[in-house]
Structure formats: C-alpha cells, structure tokens
Image (spheres, rainbow, N blue to C red):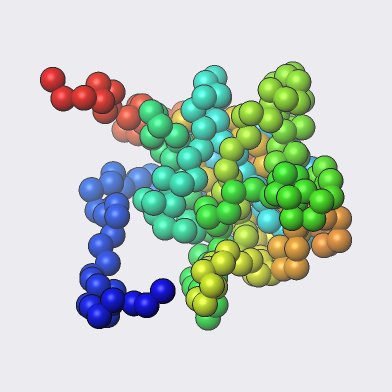
Length: 281
Ligand SMILES: [Zn+2]
C-alpha cells in the first residue's frame, strides 16, 4: 500500500497520554509502611511449581509473594472476597499505570466497580526499570498461559497452564465444578515476568525474569480479597511456557496483619461513584 504524500506529517502528531493519572488519589504509602513495620505474619502458603493456590486477605492487611527458591513467574487473580463478580481488571490497570507495575501502582477491579483492590507497597525488582529490549518486570500485558491457545498453536493438550491451575485451585477453594470455576479465571498480573514488545514486529516477547531467590513483591489489600496464584509452568519464562520443559520453582505467599489502630484515617475504597444512568436526562 502506497503511503499518502502527507504520511510524515500524519505520523508526527504528538502522542497524548490516554489516562493522565495526576488526578488519581495517591495511596498513603508511608502510613502503609508504618503499619507494615508493626504487622505480624498470619499465614504462609507455598504454591507448588505448575500448580495454583488460593488465599484470603482482609482489607487493611498485606500479602507478599516471594521467589523463595529461585526465579519464578506468578500469575495472580484477585476477587472481592464475597462478590466474585468484582475481579481484577488488568486492561484498565495497564491503561492507568502502564504496561508493568511497581511501587505505588494499584490493581483495579472491573466495571462497574473500578476501585483499587490492592496497592504495590514493595518491589525488590523496582531497580530493573526498562532494559535495552524495552523489557520491564511485573507485566499486566499478557493474559495468562492457557490450554486453548496452546492447542491452537501446537495441536497438543497441556493441563498445567496457569489458566488450568487457577481453575483447579478455585474449584477446590470454592467447592465448585471445574466448568464453573473456569468462568471465574481472568487476565492476571504476571508477577516477576519480564516482557515487552519487539520494535520491528510489535510482537509480545518475554525474557528470563531478573528475579533471584528472595525477590518479592508486596501488596496492601485495599478491600477484602480472595486471591489465586499460579506458579507458571514457564518458570522464569526465559524459554517457553505451557510445557513441562522449563525449570520451575514454588512461590511463597505470606499474609501480614497490622495491630488495631495502625491505619487510623484510612478507609477501604467504595465502589466507583459513576451514576450508571448511561444516558443524559
Ligand atoms: Zn503461566
């Protein structure tokens, strides 16, 4: 297709940030940190390699995901603990904060709720920034590895993709059949995953996670949460996912609660206040 004469002029339009975030409420990170410094550990969960586990976190508590043995990508789903229709919305999180998240960014819930579910309080990989390939860590681009795409591309069945791991874990936690649990699984936060887009073809790429043993990302729960976390079969996602070939590690989750009174002045956010009329009067 021949480009028009004014192609260069058309291409030189100034980019405009779709969702300027300067009007967004800033989370009180210092208050969260103070509360965290006095918190006690409530629970420790080990997510085995190529499996997923569920856990609950009360609003005002903290949860930390740690690569306790080595580099391991973790696929995280979040739900409001009593209303499973309210779930993590990776697309809008990406639109608000960018393709990867770090300290101070929030994980937002789907429409019509659209409120912060969790805030990133600590990220031991925050130093990584952006590498020469355009790669960054803690991705909200990718969806989750799943057996349907795997079958589409290879004709083979694989049952330990994150989609299936999350399905099994939710079925067990909620005592639901697999078919019902599967409908709850949604696009994830890919914790520790290093990704970007190739410059020439714009294709989604992954590269070995820079995480090492002990690296972690920690969240403050803004609302009561049911969380499901899968230790991706891709391991550090440096070669491939959706197979048993890559070396895989467990992930450790710890939940921490601060003493009463440490969050005075903080309120769990309410649902989005849009009127929902969808039409002018
Ligand atoms: Zn995965």
